[in-house]
Image: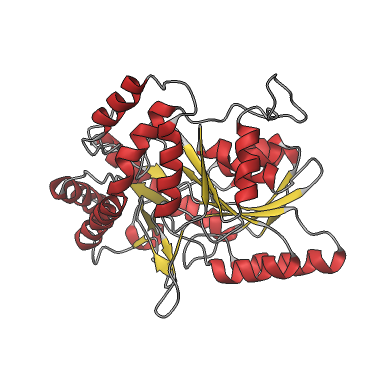
Length: 385
């Protein structure tokens, strides 16, 4: 349980989880693999519009596997969004490769397509292309994937979609086919930790349109065991398999995905109504190219116009038992990566969003009265009361 009366993003159960767990327990399939895992993977792939899926222990594990199956290795470079959580970057280091951080753009707060294209063109001319690009979809909104994919395809650079925060987000405007977050690149990954729209308490999923990539990831997730009677290993693998129990939990949650998206968007709408006209408070924009799930409602606090700062507002909310959290500290600012001297392309936009950005409580179970109370605290802080 959260120590906050109003947490940032609480799990929201459907009521079907206990019967699902009982079904799995009564089958005596407790250990990793099992019929619930197989069914969860198939149902998730179908919900995402087809392709193939592998259930994992975490989104981080799924990203590690995604980079392995794309051939990322020691000495390679990988371009990755700088405005993200460290789990988007650490798997690059697990493989001995080097991350290069790419700044955000203001329309979506995601990776800047123009900056990425400029860097890929420069590297392509010089014969220094990266081994992959990791595009992170932030707080429930997809990056502008069409120009990103066009430039990466031009240079033959594979794309991993980190959709850990964006399950249920969609890409496509009027007249264009709609695609789900995580399904447009070469490999996509998701997270099911307790804060997400769909949770298995912990866990993740890897998806790809190519069966052979998922098959290789599955082998690696099972310690890379060869298909013989004895234990034979020709390469290094990992223990990244989701348990049958957690898969049963996920199957109970999956049918509620659209409802959870609608509820999170309703929470955002309530914030927007409650904070309308408040000087210096701006929401993360919803870009024209898709549907934002509003997994987290994020605001930007302009100190000159609002008369306060992100940190003063966060502290005031905290004093009232309301959990909020700064927007991700950019990876190029993180001490662990700065000590290692990793390069960054730009960074000013991500720096500003971190200094002024705040994520508000966004649980799909949050009541209108709770949102009104949070808005009242924000209004008091901005008005100086």
